[in-house]
Image 1 (cartoon, one colour):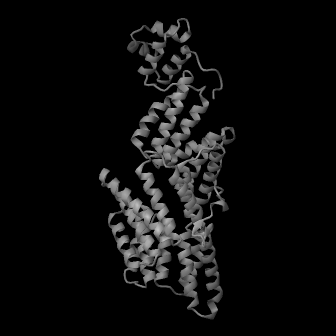
Image 2 (cartoon, rainbow, N blue to C red):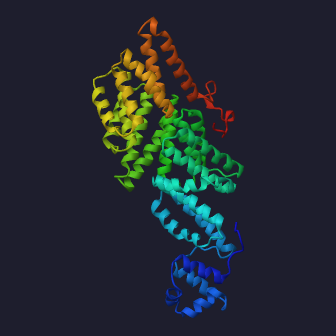
Image 3 (cartoon, rainbow, N blue to C red):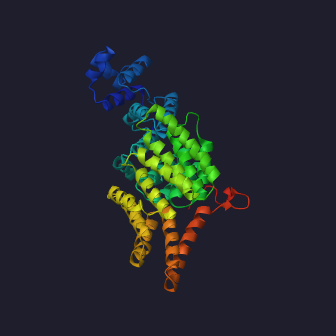
Length: 447
């Protein structure tokens, strides 16, 4: 782990003092010794008693210092506790551990520990949505990724994938998360957050079968004391995926679990729980919409709209789902108002803005606007990985072109082919006869 032997006790005292930017006099005072004694400790002219090294570390708030093998083991264990607190969204605890463990930067010989600290800190920054700060860390390690060991590469790739996920680059996110996953398998090390993140990517790209397999694996990997928030999103996403391929019973079981957790979170913090309660209603609404139980769907969408923060993407998603639900019901009266709200709220979100433009065309189609939906909006949304939306739009256009007569047969066929290919992507790996997922077809290899 080290580039050179562990420093002597004398060197350790000087490293700690310099890191805290103290003079020898400033360190000597609280230790009740003279400046000269501190100087002799640092030069090695006087041996450092064990209790004095402990006292210095305590005085400088440097409890976790790898001064020997036990200290190194303690630091490694503390790093894992810190990482778990980050994964569990316990940010108050995570901030405390970051402060405690940041002292590793006082010891430049501990290169591997410093790298691991910085990569864990990058994950915390990503969780806190401090993307610019996280990118600075990622940029540093991008230049020297070949120098990292497999464990370090795993954390780098995971963070890089998460960054791309948060910046809406699903293809790049999937590439880096897959690299991380392959490394964890090589090291016989499985990870709840990694599986979940890849599943989220694959869901967005329309690979529902792969997403479900990874989510079910995540469910098996949940730890004792796993955070309620991470479990909420696990069951919520499982419900959404099962809804997408029409397995209503499984969707409902997972939606029920996510709703139950949301209710528990409400008892802890009613204001923060609004996102979870609203997202749970959105999950039910989507499930009922896919099952064509439109009245139930509308009821749940309305509950979600009433409670979701209107600056959250889930709010836009709910408005979108409610509108398309009315279009499928052929009840167009509420659509103009809903689309107006959606276009206004998505003014600074181009993806959702294009989605609402598409709905505007669906609510009142004619030949020129249908062409815009086909040749402008659908290609843009495909590029952004909005597979679920493109599937809905392409099915609509296929049906619309059929009504336009012989001159539109080729365009109807083109949209039908697109819808079929996307639907195949949704169901890839599902054995219709046995009503189960064929894990062996792709295992963990996500392309």
